[in-house]
Image 1: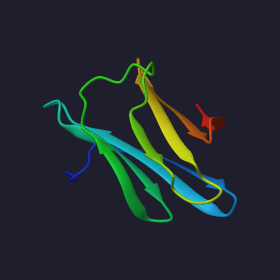
Image 2 (image 1 turned 180 degrees about the vertical axis):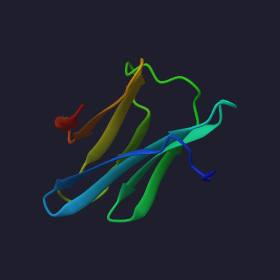
Image 3 (image 1 turned 90 degrees about the horizontal axis):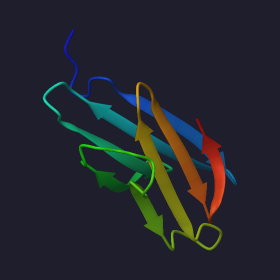
Length: 94
């Protein structure tokens, strides 16, 4: 069965009652995207072909009074890994 977003992986974390979700998908034609959501609202998208984990792939700044920044690092070397930071603090890391 073909899907519009093959090889989809998602991570969902709670921060002060708010739901932060990061998703990533790709196919063998080197198409794909990473997306950042907060409480279902789409905040950022990145379609870079390479994710090394050395630079921020997704981000949003000045989100709310208690969320000054959301930054997501993604790396792929045999396995997809996510690191999600809120206000500079790691709240999820694979």
